Image 1 (cartoon, rainbow, N blue to C red):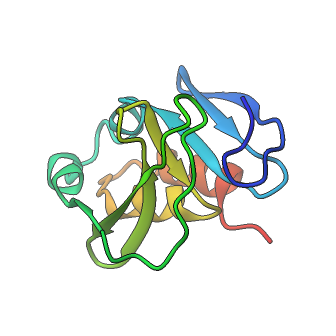
Image 2: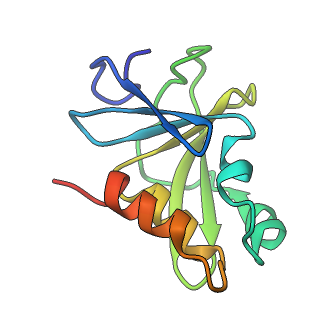
Length: 129
């Protein structure tokens, strides 16, 4: 699969049996539908966090195309202790996270006593560049 931002081929990494597509050029991350929920398993805030995903029709960021269906993706604002703007396929194919955004979302989840997921995301996909 090619990156929806820079068109470079992405590599597939496996995290906890979840296939994550990662761009080594712009450091973006693609998660297929349902994979974010799997990454957030064990989070006390998982349901509340997923409910915090709101369409942001006024976002100034340019819309990018889904790497699966090529439709222009929606901008989704996720609010918590901080705000993160991500991209969501309108056909529910998955979510796109620019560099550092996946870490921002995972940090909004509360993983009491087990920071394994947060540490792993930080080590592999933390903000680069």
